[in-house]
Image (cartoon, rainbow, N blue to C red; front, side):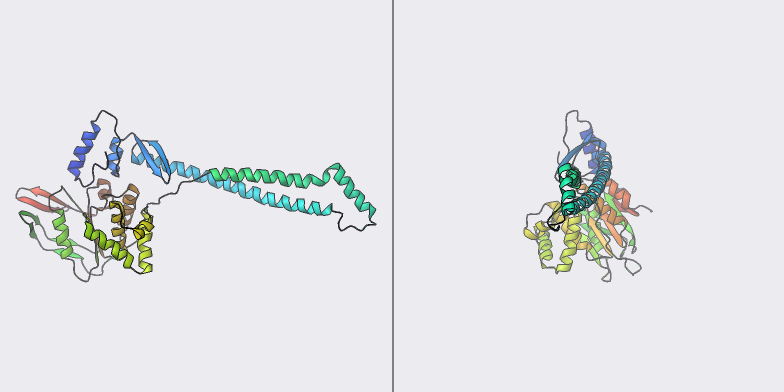
Length: 364
């Protein structure tokens, strides 16, 4: 199965997980859902640059093993590099000594009447003593070549460090969002919302089943943001119009801003050149671009609606790290339980009540 939990809410994800867990045959699961991988798989095939490595266990166990292997590989390479450096210095010293010895046994600059010196050099040549330094130099060169060969074999795979960087600024106003208690409606659908506040450093996570009004709440929150607050928004669904707008914006930006955007994309493990060369972007590449374009504005309020859809695990972990340290306020809509648990300060949840849909704040 290829990404079976994309766009699914928590309840449906659990149903999928239970169904897959009961499957008695052999399964291949392609997923960036960390919880799903940890609960289901017995082996993980992990891509590291151009290498594919099979490791036992789910994602957490396999990635932990990969980190241990990388640390060992780094230590081995550093040891091999130190040995190669030592032998290189010794080879240089012996090469210089051999050159000096060669100069000493040369008869070129001797006086033609200095028979004693010519005899000493001749005896050294006959006895073989004149070549000792040269032989030692040759042996050391062979040892150096072998050490450098060993160093070249100690390849450490490029590590994706799972970081985006620091972005965002806390607003100076007393709050960034204030929404009066109301009933929000869209066609025949409605949801009751209590009075809502988001303060300048609040980290809010909105959860709830699909179809319970989360997007309607998000839209109302964005509409209530005052002009003095800089808001950045990455929507859940990106159509052709938004796709074209994002690419045109990138190509029309000044070099400094463009460089900052592409730097974030690169740190999210995607090729920046692909964004500049063509329009054939995967959903994950497009989402990374849109996220980067919003982050470089250093918003006071960041609104992300299901940002982990189509993102690889490394990018999800990078996003998680950025959100934990985000200095401003954010509203995150997600079904990713691990992400939600890691970043939530305030929880909002849409749910069905006795009188219909309502939004509940965790501290109510």
